[in-house]
Amino acid sequence: MSIPSPRGEREKLITALTPQLRRHLKIRAFEHGMDIQDAAEHAIKAWYTADTVPEVDTAGARTWGTFLPVGEPDTFKNACTERGVTYVQGLAQALTLWLEAHPSPSTPLTEQPVIRVIVANQKGGVGKTFISSGVAQALAEAGHRVLIVDYDPQGHLTAELGFEDLMYEDDVETLLMHMDGTAKGDIHDLL
Image (cartoon, rainbow, N blue to C red):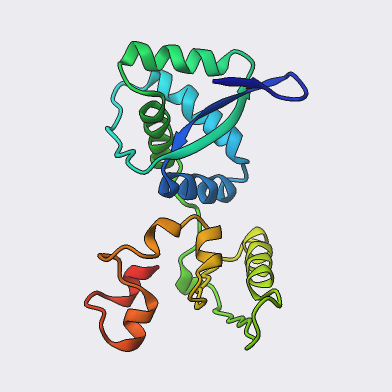
């Protein structure tokens, strides 16, 4: 499905994307000083000429859309048809190739000073999640590497960052498991 943008210069491509791939795209696009739709546009254009493309697991993909230049959504759909892949698979392949071609330029964490900011209050509904996510985003936009730890049992910050699918899976270890000693893996795997 294609929806024209309000300015008429772009059309919206609506397909689906896994939460993990969406997360990686959002982070990597930011690291390279691009917005998500430009990164997606570059990924799709490179996918057209790629000789080999990976088969990507798209289980759990959710509706996702991006604005592309006028006519580009139809060109993408035609290319998917010619390659015999679904639109979801075609987009996943394009973004996976783009992520591989554009590695993270971040400096290793060991080269940065560690600063801890803790937002806490015993009362609910006072804005802890809102403040935490805002401060984290501001620090990330200033070029700092940021780790956010969500101790809230409701997991609102975790869900806001796109990890809601991992919150209650039985085979995923949590910070709580490491705190109560029931975890079997390394705590570094949580990062």
